[in-house]
Length: 116
Image (cartoon, rainbow, N blue to C red; front, side):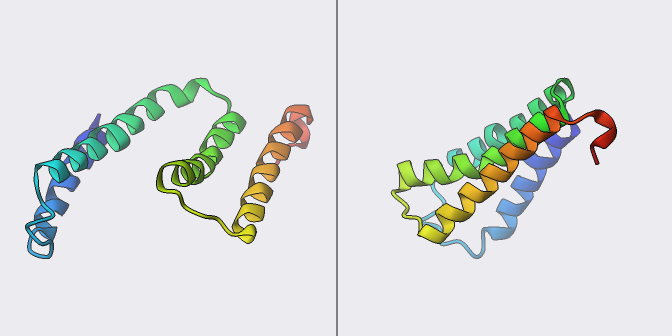
């Protein structure tokens, strides 16, 4: 629960530090609500849920879930922001995803004594 208060407090503190550098036309009610949502839902709530339920999932599956974060970020930026990816970035992403999947498959079929 401490991480929740830490994120909220640091977000408020950072907002006050940025006030002199941000034009006042940007800092309207919509921006304040969006920042609050990002602080509470997308950061603090996720950290609390992660800390609570990660203990029930095997470490290799947790690693696989964390590795999918970059994939979903790229997918949503492609869908929502119409971002274009170069062939090099697509190949790099596919190599990363393939290595993670192969590691997950190898870890399940390897005896515990042979794992690093």
